[in-house]
Length: 455
Image 1 (tube, rainbow, N blue to C red):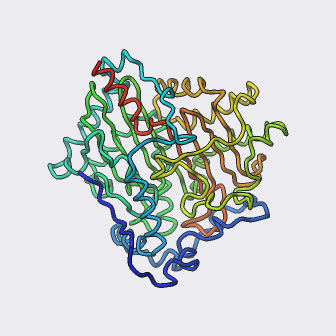
Image 2: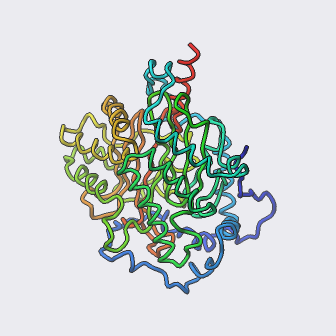
């Protein structure tokens, strides 16, 4: 079974202006990638000051379309086709994993040999039962559509835009209410309570954006694809995937461990008026507290660029779609060199703050699995790096990356897509989580589990 791909790379003649600056500005403002000598400050205005008028063509041209027609039209411009072609080429590469220098560190991941040989895995009973409940509620065609082999390449087809690139599994908004409830039950059974709350908050914020723009057919709490990989069971690896606008989760159970990576969670806007704090408020506050605590010497190492659109950035460092984050969709094999401050230069309180931030990135994992993941991060303190772009006092939008052999975690402030802010602001946030050196999608653990079973 193969993911249905909706991009077609145009190899023929193109109209001279089809992919030019005006077309690009209609999708991703060129301001989001243009270097600026002046600092971008955090606005004191509400995100509501950046709402488009509902009659503006930015919104009105899409109103009344379903996600199928919307996606078809949004893929039409030549520069989008070029972007899709680039992403398709990355998707077609054999999986290696994110590395710092192009070489996989085979010592980074160790699955407990006893658990691997026993074939058991953590937190299996409730997720297995929930997955089987999903399958029971589907008819034959639906079961065929949602189910993939454990090693299927479709794991890597996830994406976070609001338009469809790959069709993998079933779309929640196309399912019956009982089926949707069962899928959400699978997600809830697999995550920590606080992690599940965060995921649902992000999905609900997608719906809130649909309401604000009057485009609920395109952005709603159920505009997500779901797939199940392998046979949900207590004695062999299996997993599930959920992805769509601003939410992408890849969850695997294998040999005593649970992996939830890659993860992409974002929001535009990152809050709904007065209903709750911004979705990453605590993480941002801790990040600013850590950055503000740096000594002048530490800050000199940690701050890679003075602003998020620093003219010193090399060409291509800011991507029209990804902006500064490097570990998003289709970046499974990216080489991401270390930059920033070595964590061994932190004092004990600063290291504690960094671990608090890391734990928030790992929040989706159940508590026992989160503890195991944190222990792996602690074990790599000398190899951990903290990179920061922007002011360290919270006065500017910023980019944060924490990277080691066992984690790559990012938080990036973005310009508007459905809001009109043409430069990054803190009410549009993207976050990513990766497990470098081949353990995204639990692949390193799965290989070790198989080796343990074979020995």
